[in-house]
Length: 249
Image: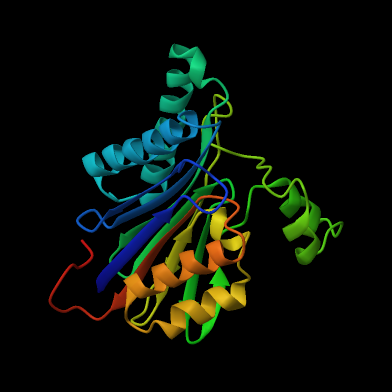
């Protein structure tokens, strides 16, 4: 299986700094998006620390015989690193970050997340959400108290119920998805899906065909064209049969 990728991060139209971070490491088969919070500088620190720690842990051991346990350990260590940095620097108090990752293991993708950054899969003309937002509005939707459209406009739509750095212990969700040639895996911060409806996300990806960079550009343009209220980061993976170029480990 061959994995190609493209990524793009943008400040948006309303923010003066970008607190998102992303990582694409084809050698490890590791792809990560983090959306920092806590204000200028602090959010950037949390997002970058999370990405770097996950990369270090998985770089030391790879997927290993039990990828789920390795991913959980990497995220625990990232959480610990953020908490410890906060204790060391008063100015960083309150910082945290969401995180979503894909770890490619032969013909599968291990998907893990904390917070409301998302993973989607495009297959055979449809878009499937692979993650469940850890957010206040999503809990209200699950209880039948808010509709999807109401949640998009709700003033608490950016309130997450789980994030790295928010407490001493954090629980990540981890699952595994099969991959087939033609799949697209999209990792994104909520600056995309909070501004752009899923049908338009699908149209942008399908319309770009095999050009992953063009798809990323169109997604960011859609988010900014809809108001660009937040930083927006997109990381798009393309799955194909083995051939020349980057491949999964």
